[in-house]
Amino acid sequence: MSKPKVYFTDMRTKIGEGAAFKLVRLIKAAGLDKIDFKNKYVAVKIHFGEPGNLAFLRPNYATEVANYIKTLGGKPFLTDANTLYVGGRKNALDHLESAAYNGYTPQTTGCQILIADGLKGTDEVLVPVKGGRYVKEAKIGRAVMDADILISLNHFKGHECAGMGGALKNIGMGCGSRAGKMEMHSAGKPYVEQKKCTGCGACLRVCAFAAPEIKNKKAAIRHDICVGCGRCIGVCPTDAVRAAQDESFDILNKKIVEYSKAVLDGRPHFHISLAIDISPYCDCHAESDCPIVPNIGMFASFDPVAIDLACAEAVNKQPVARGSLLAEREQITGDHFTDLTPATDWRVCVDYAQELGLGSADYELVAIK
Image (tube, rainbow, N blue to C red; front, side):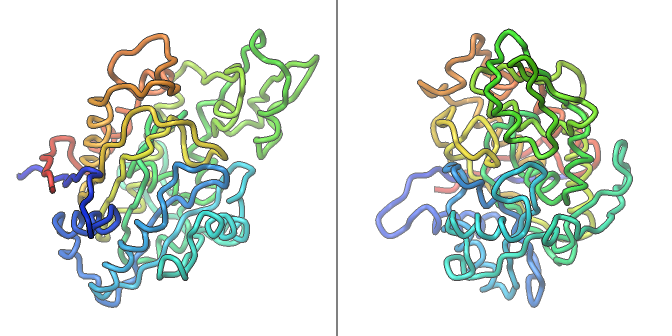
C-alpha cells in the first residue's frame, strides 16, 4: 500500500501570485479535483476567529478555496459550530457577527456561511462512531452532516488542552454541537495554585458555567460544574490556573479523534493546513500571543493523520521565536508542543486516529515551489 502524500509549499510568493493563489496551486497539485464535486454540497470547515484574536486565517484563503470548488461544480459553504464558552461565537447570531467582524461574509468569500449546529447550538445529529472506545454516538452539527463533502481548512497552532490544533482538532471539536463539545471536554479539569492567584476574576468572567468562584480573594474551580474546556488556563494573568496532571487530556484527544471519525466516515474529505502565525493557544482566545516559531507554509492532503503529523514535525524543526511564550519555558526539549503544554501529549491524537483507521503516520512529503 502506497504512503499517503502530504503536499507542501512555503510562504514565498512572486510578482503576480499571492499566497492565497499559491494555495490554490497547492490543492490542485494535491489532487482535490479527484473528488466528484458536481452539484454536491461542500462544507468547508473553518474557524472564523474569536473577536480580538488576530492569528486566525484571513478570509482570502477561504475565498480562493471556495472559488476553486465552484469551478469543479460544487456548492461550497463555510461552517463552524457554536462554542461551549462565553464569547463572540456562543450562538449563531453572535457567531455570524463575529465572522463578519473578522472579514468573513458571503460578499467577501463568494459563498454562504452556515453555523453548523443552529441558533443555540442544539441542532445536532447523533452519528455512530465505528470502533469508538469513549463515544458511541457523536453529536455533530446538522449542517456538517447534511453536506456531501467535507473540506477542512485550518490554522495549525498550539493548544492548551490538546497540545496542538490541526485538521483533526478542527474537525472533531469544531464540528461538535455544544453538547458534543461538553462530552469531549468532560475530563481534563483544571485547578488553581492558590499561591499564584491574585483573585482578579479573569477565570470567572470567561467561564460559561460559573465554575470558578472567588473566596478570600482567591479563585477555586468547582469540578462538579467545570466541563474542562481549559479557557481559564489561557486567560489567567499569573498562570495560577493549571491543567490537571492526569490522563484526562489523553481522553480528550481520543474523543476528538472519535468525533472526527464520525464526521469523515462514508464521504469524501480533504484537508488543508496553514502553519503560519503559529500561536501557542487556540484561535478561540480573544487575543493571540506572538508566534512560537517562524512561519512555515501550507500543507494539503487527503489524509488527516498524515497532514497533522507533517505539520507538527515541521514546527518542531523550527527555532524558537525570541520573545514568545515558548522561549520563556524553563525547559526546551525540541518538542515545542510538549514544552508549551507538558500536561498533554499531542501524539495521542495522531496515534489514536491511525489506530481507528483515519489515516497513516507513514507519509510522503511532496514539496511544491
